[in-house]
Length: 442
Image 1 (tube, helix red, strand yellow):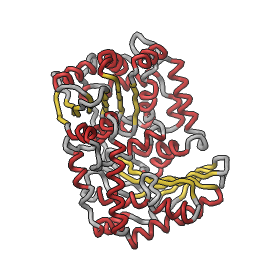
Image 2: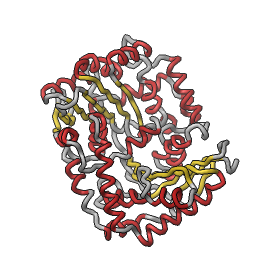
Image 3: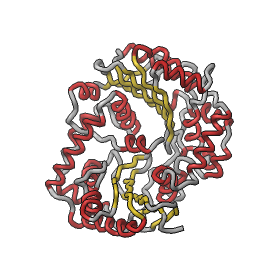
Image 4: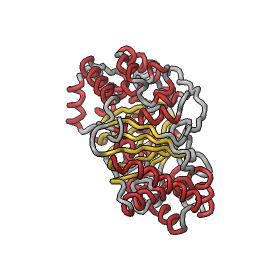
């Protein structure tokens, strides 16, 4: 998953300033059931010619594998489109390109996901290809090995993609010690290089079954068309046994330790983790507002950019965003700066956290945060795929089809007293886990 997709996945929050067409797309959601008994959500959208489908196979991510096979879900999702059925990878890609069909797959600690976007004009062909990708991956040996080596090598190169390495690997190993989430998305480098195509095939047979499925669909489809479509997608997919979820909820282990990793060059990337409230907490929306003021979404009026960049010139950029795993939630943040300014940036960030904890935010900041969250949602829900992403995300968190309306109401509910009370409760400058990648040390 690329950095941009990481941010898209975790920065979806609800607001009310939607266009008329976007509002209709988002609100007209219904749970249906196919003839095979597969339950799914349909958001009807008569204004768009695209049909978007998100499929999640639950409890199939890295945390649900044996330790030595933790990297199988990511390797599977990265290579599952290396040829499908009668098509080689090149032929499959060419077919999708010619018909303007987007098919992709991704994996995280909890789940494995597939998505398909296609015009209704070529929907029949798209579903055939989508079904083929799910049921008949070829895992072409040379392509699979090349992808595996590329991922494995990137885990050893801190300078190439520090955000992804820290987010997907290093930070989980620090804040989830002795818990399956500590494996991150790849597991150990040594184990990842040992994974085989046979591991991928066994994974498919065990986890890609209809009893594990969550699905959302957005498009200009009738209910009758949608239920038929769902069963076509899963034609040839066995019902199988649902993957059990044997994990317990866990609180991230945060402390004041700073882990440093050497990478050549003049710049340092500073990453940190903070406490937050889980999605279904009654304090979740207060936490959203609090972290918006801290700096969620690269907000220039947020404390991080206004204090560390505009006033002090210590950083180039900085932000925070929520990370919601099935059994834990935390805030992940990053700062980009010069090597010589890294330590000072950390010290002043802690001072910002202390000030928020002791003095809270102002009424003016609270109003700005509410308006900013609502305004950003207008952008976030511009397309059918954006809406499909939003609903599958909320469906997995256990919310119902009315979640958007509920979010529209709930973001306005927290008072200044409640937000500042939460700041005193969850913010602690002495409990921030840091990872620094840069040239200040070897």
